[in-house]
Length: 391
Image 1: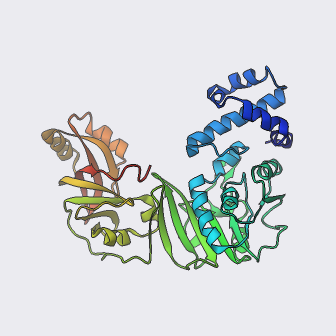
Image 2: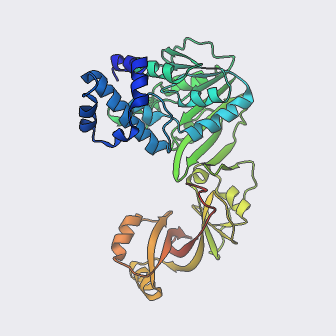
Image 3: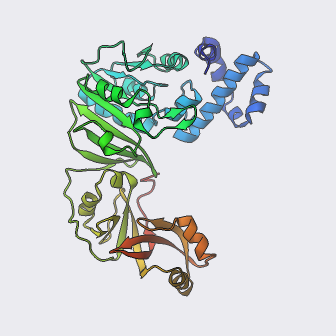
């Protein structure tokens, strides 16, 4: 975003305009929205207002609400979800320390920390984004600068870092290409009493700070982030899985079930992504009273149980996989695969569905996997969880 546009958006003139404009205008195609606003505004200002209305609409779709901030397109993509930011802020509030966000962006995390009563400040390297962040965060000091040379004293509080994973050519997956550079990020974390690093959920474990506490946070069906905590208040080596909005958690202090596999029983459990990514499948098995089906596969089996951290399925049939055998069994029993899941299975669900061809009958779920080296299909029906536990 151009600096001139950012300065207009934080002006009283823009604030009044945005509060008066009908949010429903955001549903118009961009060119029609801009034409509509140009009736009352100069072209540059109309374009800025049109962009904000469109971004507010995208924020509503993404978050289920519009946090009411000034946005850039790139900043909205990086903005912390309010539920994740609020949970993090509650933990930071328990530390009772001032928070410095060295990658403040549009201010999602600091906004939640301010709401929790913490003194806050932020640093942003992009000039236009820093202007918007300052307006988004009344009560917090926002400076323009780079995390490699922060203008703040860090050692008296908490430092928060969320390195950018985007560039002009798209998303970056190598942590060395993040901004700020990974080495800078790790160095800043150790300069404060406590440090919080937000990383992509697929980050290699050996890239995280040594002896950090790490939690993998999932929102609904989407695994959102890996968060490393260091210093004061952190439990070095601890791994945690978190599922929101259910608020369900499990960590590596919990008892773990044996790695020895067992047979497919009456119920099969499919743990949520946060559990598998945190390496806590056996811990969840112990909580469910279940056992592994194979040491290399995350499917579990055991007596009926309900836990937000796993989908449960009542087993109808188990068979060694061949396409002809599966197709025949479905037609014989009058089953139609409404959902296909896989773990350690060579075919993608869409490919298997296409190969099976049209099916009629009662809806079932296919759990496709490999057990003791044998391709296996478990035919099952979902066991309902409490409403909206993972919505």
